[in-house]
Image (spheres, rainbow, N blue to C red):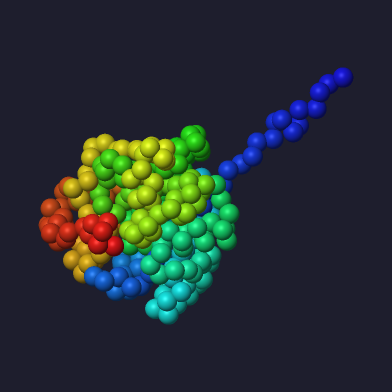
Length: 254
């Protein structure tokens, strides 16, 4: 008699969600995540890129309960993205809340001040983790080779929950720093690209960043992807100079 192997053949499909942290209370450029960039709000650009990534099951915006972030929640609702609202300062708790409300096995952490996010990089990180789900953290940040503002991080939800039970200080603000900062406790895997372009900056923190990004988006003329970004900036040193002086804040500075 033939043996029924239907149960054995069933594979449990793991879920990967992308959570975009977004708030209006930036100290250097308040309201930056809703700023218009080339005719499109910055938040919309990040959401569109996350939705375009393969291997991502759901995109969620995680903002705070502060009244100033009502506009973020409203914009997310307008473009049809689920919204989670939690602590303004304890961003790690906000991420745990997001995976509580939208269950998944791993979460891609994105920030709403990175308007040139490349869906291909999100897809790569998600696919890498799906092929090695024992990893607690998969990211392009362990060895930086991408322009600042294009990095992608993924955390296994069980590891994120474990971290949330012990993390203090800036590890609660920066969400993943407690993972890659403790490789004896958490398994971390880094991805790199070539040629390296980590000397470039395409994140949005200051007015000068906005000036640089505005020129870059115009020069890209509809092209997308990290290679196109690097190609344009290598050929346009005038754009690079617009925000080359901007200092990236340290973890301790928030």
